[in-house]
Image (cartoon, rainbow, N blue to C red; front, side, top):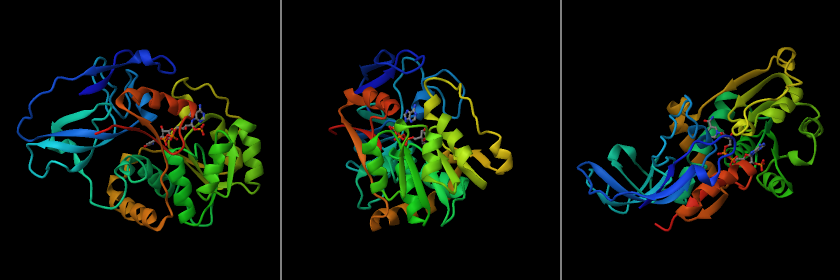
Length: 329
Ligand code: NDP
């Protein structure tokens, strides 16, 4: 049972020297505990923040300890009521082959006909983030024009599809022609390759009448371009600013005063602020998946060895859809 440990805190972009794959001792289960063989590990941009020794909404990873993250696995041994061998579960003890913990650490997956990995994507954290950010934080309405950055990624691809399912006009930005083609395939009305020109000019061309909503996954120039394009009473849901996670912020915002004239409402959020709406999210998302309105795509790295590379690839755009690590089980 191997687990990735954080062995040095990164400065800037993490490197392989920050991680070490180490064997964990195999302990017998205590009463009330469950042993799970992981099948899918999630790697997510927020984990970069947890590698720092800084106070934030999620506690820092401890140096010398196994890292954590979303995972789906199968119960292989149980000394807890409610869990039996073979059950599929969702939990936060990722970055390792086997998870051992008290039963409350695990959630049994409902028996619905979707791939188990989707509980880490459209039916899980990234889908929920898209849903609450678009519909609750930005209060996007049918007929409005929505701009979403990192639109070919996990959260972004869900935003595009939810917005289309709700009758909105959608413009997505992504890096490169292949990603832009994917964003259009998802139903976006326009896709902008931000690597092909200045994002403020490209957005102004794609949305000549402006945008009502900006769903921000990137920050920096994308946010500035959205400020320039905002219509009266636009709402910005600030979900992520991946451009700054490794480099810190040193942007010049040229259009920031438009917040006043256009009465823009800008709000940051975390998906777990909306736990009371989780049942609505699951109802709508399972419906959209069943009807084909929301499709899932994953970029998959195989084997526990590949987890840090999969994680680092997020910062160079190595994924289309949700980035996942698949284990043999
Ligand atoms: P993605 O699947 O979108 O992967 C990250 C993508 O970001 C890459 O594929 C790349 O796409 C883009 N990217 C990376 N570096 C840069 C850069 N320097 N400039 C512009 N784009 C970049 O990840 P997620 O869907 O998991 O997360 C998307 C965002 O949502 C992140 O900012 C994340 O932190 C945030 N988030 C926030 C949550 C919340 O509760 N607030 C919860 C979950 C995620 P490309 O090739 O197109 O550049």
